[in-house]
Image 1 (cartoon, one colour):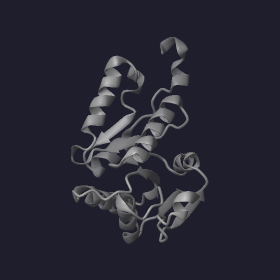
Image 2 (image 1 turned 30 degrees about the vertical axis):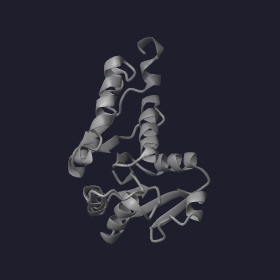
Image 3 (image 1 turned 135 degrees about the horizontal axis):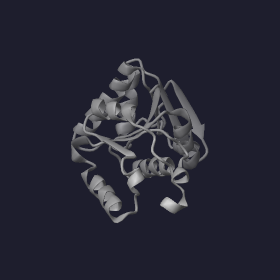
Image 4 (image 1 turned 180 degrees about the vertical axis):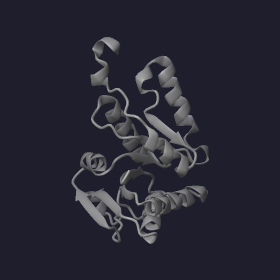
Length: 193
């Protein structure tokens, strides 16, 4: 994997484990020669992952809508900053420029990005691995909810393993590299849905 998109929050939580993990992810990407594609922000986890990757000599591509650039939250020291018009264009650029997705802790924007990456994988709009770094159990509730959706039948058995989970960045990257593309809804066919 040459480039991965990272979804994460622009907040700085009180518990330092989140910022420390973001920095570790940025350093790890740079050390492994993995380019970072992210939301382009300078604040919170977004800024931490970018700064760490840059400090370690990595490539960092930010993608940000003009309205957020105008609000002065853009990171100005990136390898590249792509300015787009809308959040939809931003998410499309994440998909176009990366070979997979890593989700760190974050809020509603991070969840929006994660769910879209998962949904697009189910539908066959991309065949890229979708990873979730479960930092300090942050996503335990989400994983329980996902298991409930599988149990009830809203996530089909064919798609039960679309979300790749790891407790450490090394484990997550290894699982993502080994992941096989899932059968998409188009490939399954209406009769098997």
